[in-house]
Length: 171
Image (cartoon, rainbow, N blue to C red; front, side):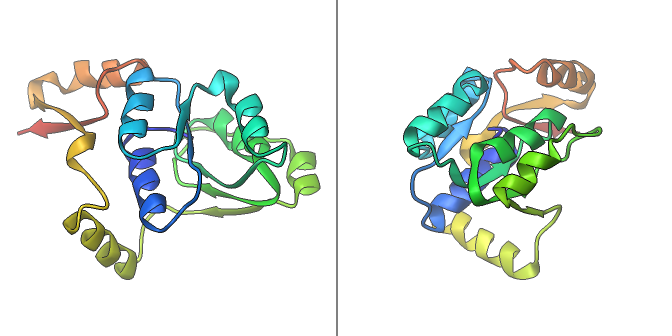
């Protein structure tokens, strides 16, 4: 869930690691298209995610759901999209309390993990993936701005429909 820089990097990482079918859930059409160009098998709007995942998994749900959006509501939807006994990895940092349904977590026997950083070994592996082309960071860079434009750019990005993915700031 989430096709910002974190989600798109996660997508590329799991593909490099041999993931099977990948479904990206993202409200922004530009980012959905970028996910497809980076190798996602499907890239869909959140409004159809539950039905789409159910249809493509014969009602089971996803084996692993990576929550990369950092939106409080997507924590519960990650659980909802996962299969019974599946895994959810919280990678996006939700800036607020997340409403959850503990009964669903318990009934599904979901295994939840969280990641805020990375180990030295993971950093080295990622550098190798970037070096050999399995991870394309250039595709994520959608623009470079001057420091004087940063406030306007944050407003644009926060609106949810920005054409940008990863913006670099020129000092």
